[in-house]
Image 1 (cartoon, rainbow, N blue to C red):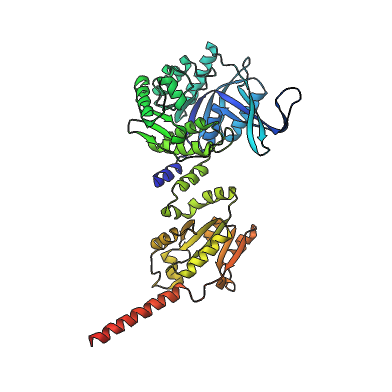
Image 2 (image 1 turned 90 degrees about the vertical axis):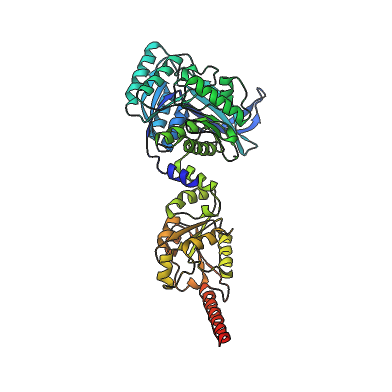
Length: 503
């Protein structure tokens, strides 16, 4: 699974996704809630800053951009200051906003949240104010939206409908969009609104309801995987869908597709805020399916992206680098420590964001002995993450001679990977590790004390950005060369003794 996910996520490209739905502006007013108002039993918020972000279908667009896709946005906005702010945000992320239609007598849907500090430390939403009109548009306005939809459909790889039930995806227009997309042979993915009648979604390729939305649509609770399976089969048959993904929060998702019907689990999370999780899942599914991934791979990647999002505050976006890092985290067995040099920077950057210090060392590590063990313990004591640059068989022969290494590079890497003091191993071909040091960019570079006079390779580079170089004490009389010579000597003695016995 690890290799498949990693290969898939690094080959997604930049597909164009026609995104139709309820575009919103999210406003977050932050402040300190340190006292209760004397006028009423409510907290007083002393405002410290105001942030703006994309909401609703806008958050799907922002996530598509963050993941590398190009969203073609189709929807309505008001003729007001909030619409300009929303367009500015979307355009800055790389979205095509030419399909957003201004409706003068309708405000841009806006959700304004007041955020205070709980116990002076943790962000907590105190109140939300919504500015919106949810009535359907006029026939003329729907006709114009349909024209825009058809224009954008020509350049799209697939279609996303994000329905928050704010009036844009009314029944007739929703059915028309699905029909036009089907005629153009484009997949249609839908995040449905919490309604009981899903008939307007009939004929879509895929829908992504959560537990509550599924319950409303099928009339029974989704408490178990068996419940999800029954609901999925019912909705696929009733709506003539190709597939359905029922999101199951901490349990992952249930996928019913032409190829498989199965529970796709996810790892447990420290959920900080569920706002926007569904938008992230929809964006990831749209991108991965447009890039040619199969349904199971698409759901696995959307599980990962949605899981990353809920650990953030508010409607947040998720990047490809974060997904790659999470895939690597999921494969934390000993084999998962052995990485290509190109795959390391993204995860190391993620580690640094968590204030972890990266330690780098390198060597042949041909015949592991006590000196190696003590040396790697020392490395671990210097920071949080130890990266070992391992000389390949080719480079060991250049350094040590044609009879070395004793163990091949994969065996040496496997032994290092089994050690708790080692977090990552990357194999390099060059006689010296300078290119590897430059790629890893460690906070701390460690070599043995015997390198003091020879000069530590990469030291100047590490010091140039404020990193440090540390020399580790050596264990007297312990080295691979000495161990190998002792083994050869013992072998010669054994051979001599055997000859004596045969005389």
